[in-house]
Image (cartoon, rainbow, N blue to C red; front, side, top):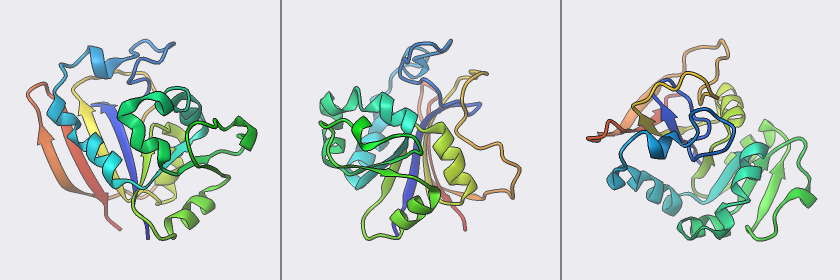
Amino acid sequence: MRTLISSAFISLDGVMEAPGGEPGYRNSGWTFKDVEFVPEAFEIKGREQQESTAILMGRVSYEAFSKVWPDMEEFAHYKTMPKYIVSTTLTDKDLVSNWGETTILRSLDEVATLKETVGGPIIVHGSASLNHSLSDAGLIDRYHLLVYPLLLGAGKRLFSTTDKDAQKLKLVEYEAYANGLQKNVFDVVR
């Protein structure tokens, strides 16, 4: 079975929205403007690119990333990696042609089936709503979190607010940096 990893930049209060400077958000760009950059904190991002064998994302994140990532040299590995987009509205004609193999999945059942295939880890970037659904369905196996020492208040949160049994996590990797940033890697305990 393949491991499904949710990877996110989040504020201390769990906000993951608009970390890179997307227009229209009050605190847009918070990962770059509010905390001093510490290169070693981002080692996990390079590791994700090398270890993951597929990308899973929701429609909104696909539409945002597909405009930028195909031409970014630092994401060259992702260009050739299979991409799976979970959407009930996206069609094949909506897919960009310069970003390699892309498959539309229509349900969480299809995500569960994908996890059962042979292959390495599947990484989820962005995709707040998809993260909620995946977590609620018990499909996420691991979290890679870069936690910023910020309280943003408003914004989409990484974690679902669905009333459910507690989801237990096991801390498998942790590092704190001088700028207050924390790297946390958790396995979901089943």
